[in-house]
Length: 256
Image (cartoon, rainbow, N blue to C red; front, top):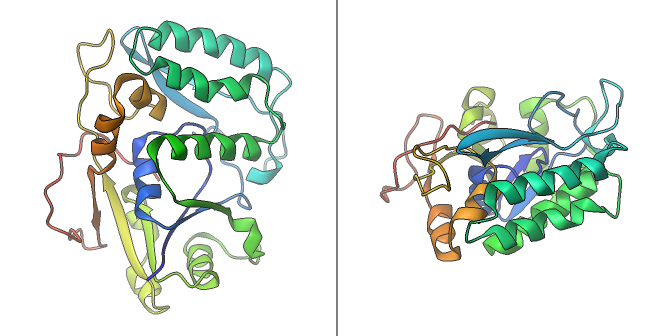
């Protein structure tokens, strides 16, 4: 039984992205698909003065149909990271995990490559290491799939190419996939329903869910993060849980 997922790369995404990685053996990064403009691949939110604050990692202008692998860092990326470092220090400087957050951001101040993909992969692997994930990161471009394949057909082809028998997707993508189409190819389809139990956040009277993984690293101890990583369930297309193990109630929205 071989379990995989396939997702676009994100810089410091929120916890359910990593819960998905925990559930699979191989995490296929979709680098040969069109980059989503005004999406969240190069944007995220942190907690600043008790409120969600959006941060953007600037990218150079590119054609509208540019692939993820084509995207490059903007000339002002270094300057932006300097400002972001100061913002993050103001936001999380007093937290127990600030040193961990600072260490994650440090390589971005002087990246070894101007490739958005390279920088993001390095950051994801660093997060995997902190979380103790042994999941392998692989690029979908390695499979040399037909450029004509889109959506579900592309995902099914990825599964078949690597002989995967189980595919897991975030819960937000339920409407995009047909379980019968996967079953016809001998693939079980599951959706991960993540949960994020409230935790104390500096300067915040009301819990702010769905922030970057940086917020989790800043506020929680390793053992607390480990417990939170297990707070999810797998469901089938019919909304039936795969296991009956009790999980914390869902407190955040999973976006595909």
